[in-house]
Length: 489
Image 1 (cartoon, rainbow, N blue to C red):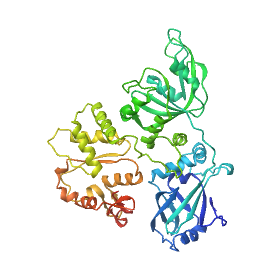
Image 2: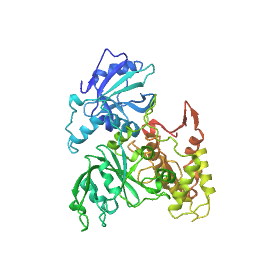
Image 3: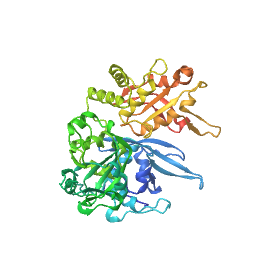
Image 4: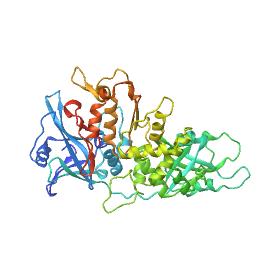
């Protein structure tokens, strides 16, 4: 029934869903033939048109937030029941990794500008099973992927310099067989050691810009015409690579210095890049990079990298918050990163800011103009991966005419539609990505009366408490106002 199935021999099964493109985008529409099954799972409660309810999806002992929404249809005065998780990036990333067979097939065969659906062949089909539990609106979810084993890749680092763009556009790496003096060079010959499926971190101009996956083993090849701008050494080794850009790029300064010093390989004794082309990386170092900057990797690379992640008896979906650095090392990294930007603050100030944010994630900085209050927050956030480009850092300038919270949180317009304020947008992004750090900088707070525009937010901050293993607060905005309950966590 429109990609949904019933298997009566499986106890407590609500339904089985064949994975399609909507699963990777926002959720799935439930056929009417399954409404009764979901009502039974929800303690015989049926939703009315326009009603939505929070649901928990339990996947391998980890809970993901979603909604059961009876979406109204104006054209026929009816509705359709849907499971939605539009903003839950962690869940969508997990689905892309788990159902990589379907995702790759649909990505390659879909046409962006047409609504014509593309269906996965039966011999490649993958499924999601929804089971009822002893609680309404809590569903146990089990995945049925194809199960093709993914071999563990080896990891490499390439310093491409000015040839990065040409090599990326051509889908290759190339290095000469011999130096100008006629000698072979180890970090060039090393291209022959890479195997199909290996992962290559592509570095150029002080940034990791892409991650490549090896398509074919290296072969002897003349210099490609795209980079044939020198007369010496026409003969070389060519390695075909599929490039996936990092969004945003990873700057060298973002990689903790202690990692670079311990790794060696492409890094010298000072943690800087060596002169050379192709170096092998340890799996430990590659996995640290993946865990620290996971949200920047393309889904295809995540699938490869996840094969290397250590498996546990009760595996978590992923745990980017796992501490690879002690608090001391984190502070040293932040201090070093800020200094690399040309700014100097006493280290005691960095320590105080770090401890203040760890204790209560709301800090007020005071001082005369020009002392660097704004910049210390900006560089602090950037040092742990939160930037304006990836939406994890937001600078909100306070205006003198603000006299209530609507300028930050939003308001209901004359049509009855809720218009989100800048703070609400950031909070919604953070709720959808609970494992990532988010920073909001309210610049020049004293230009307006704080008790006018910030009192509601302060009250909610004070309501934060530890409950059922997580931090919860009173509602910042209610569903009646904003379309969903919004809390600070």
